[in-house]
Picture (cartoon, rainbow, N blue to C red):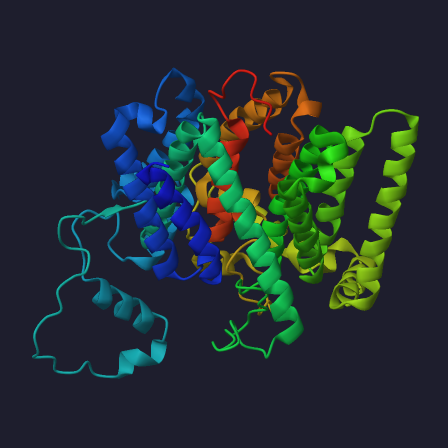
Length: 490
């Protein structure tokens, strides 16, 4: 292994254990490792170390997205902001007196004057004799009259910082994955991580005392599971892991024939898939309870050939879904599902996420072209909530819609372009060198990535640093550009 592989794997393997990487020190440390890995790859092989050649042209929207985020934080003249983002221009006029009026004004004095005008009784009160030092206007200086498109530029900087780190990780792994031996190392390391996370979560489930790692305090407004502070985000990792492990194990068993029972690698992978499935279901995530068995069902149906095998597969799937139903009946997940059905029975309009998504559409109408700024959602969104809404919306629980409200149509088109480029290559790679039925491990990996992508419609797994990094590394492995001819993935 090269030094860049060690650094990327260190970040990917350690970040999930740091509460999923949600603490700023955790993902910044991981970003430093990823940047160091990219620097090492460049130092050793130049641009080829990051795979920056003609085959990387499909990644153009990824680089444009980073450039667009950078544009969001650049202070622009009010005349440009007014044209590109009229609603942001209006908010700046409301918030910063003197903005767009030529010479800067004393912002504090202007706010006080406006407040006094709203109270007629203040006219009868004599102003105080202010002989102190005059307050310097906050709008004076180099950027007087200029504001960025992002309404929260500090948050946009933070998002851009982590996005660039993820992009560098993808480039490094994609370039290194051209080597079959390197792919095996990455796969083995990730499989070990998935099994360790699932085992830890199950042990914690049986012995938990209400504290993270049994010693740390439970964070406010969190529902931890395993090392994660939210059960949905732990379940997201299991959605990625389970079909990949199961497919790899089945591929090994089928390749070994009668000697499959002596294949320790296949047995370990099958055991890992079982542990990940159990942990994913016990995490009590409603979406994961559907996507986990659905991914395994799709994998089984993909491999079934012949009437006899299809009958056996159908029986196995019936047993799997029966086990899921049993989990629903005897675990807290069942209560959560029943509550959801009760809420939906009163109509979609009563479902909190539907309410939030409708409010987000109103926000999108106000910031259609360039959005409110990446990371600005939690500060801007409360303006669009209906009266009486008391919940704190830190995320929209729909990563795709949140991209639109943060980055507008520009970001939406770039993300759609990038997604098309990735999925067209990932799916076409399944038919290379002998067909997808000889490459079950890759099919399982694609199913895991697809499950996590579907989950993003109702949650925000991609905003959890550890899950985002694992998704990026797995995506790079799924493409496997430059794979050796005849490599069947075993």
